Each structure stands twice: as structure tokens, then as C-alpha cells.
Length: 175
Image (cartoon, rainbow, N blue to C red; front, side):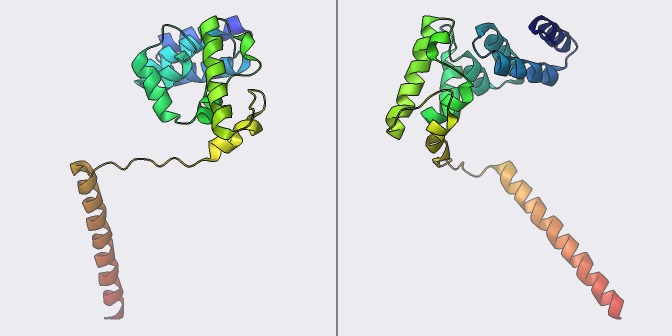
């Protein structure tokens, strides 16, 4: 299926409210055409429909008119430069970027990753930055919420009720 046909299907999917299918098609297109900024921009628009600023920021990261909050959300979700390299789904040299701004962003991410790992990394060789992907990042713990405590208490009551019925059944079996 050609790029034009796939984009027509994306438009039809969005018009019919099939946002997940449109997202899937656009992800495939970005994978096939990583240098096309229009596809990345359209994918960011779909993630905005989902209300996911980190993913919108991911796909707008190479654009000069990107939203600062979305960029910050992307950088927070993909904390290390190696994770950002993987998330950007770029292949080939930075010179293939459509704009000088995109090229500068790609160089900055690759350079930061190389400095963090202490050796050169390459967009076409994920093994070169795999060490950065394996680093553990501690997830900050959230304070307890009322809904979380109530859900836990409900699970405990359900488990105790099940156990009580089971014990009652065993006792009735031997009486």
C-alpha cells in the first residue's frame, strides 16, 4: 500500500472515530519513513487526541514549533539519552533530517548518549546504546490515595469472604 493510500485510510479512520487504528497506521508509516516530519507531526496530533503529552512530545521532538510542556513530558518519560534515542525511532545519519533544527536535536541526543555511556553511539546500531537502555531508573513512589486504600481494603474483604465460605464448606463437608 502506498504512502498516499495509507494516509487516506488514516484520514478515514479519524473521521470514523477509529483513533487506535489511525495511530497504528501512522506508527507504521513513521517506521517506514523516519525522515518525514509530516508523519511525525500527524502522529503527535493523534496522541493529543488520547491526551498523552509525553507521546505527542516524542513525535514533535524534532520540530522547532514543539510544545514545551510536551517536550518536558517526553524527556521525563524517557529519562536517559539512550531511551530517547530508541524512542525517536530515527535511522541513518542526522544529515537526513528535514530541517537544521531537527538535525541539531538528533546530534544533541546522540552526543549526550555517547557522553553518558563513554563510547560512540550510532542511530543504526542499537547495540551501541543498549547499555543506556539497561540502566535502572527508580520510579518515584506516590503517596497513598484514598481510592488506592479503598481498593486494597475491598480486595482484602473479598479474599476474607472467599476464605470464610471455603472454610464453611469444608466444615459442612465433614458434619
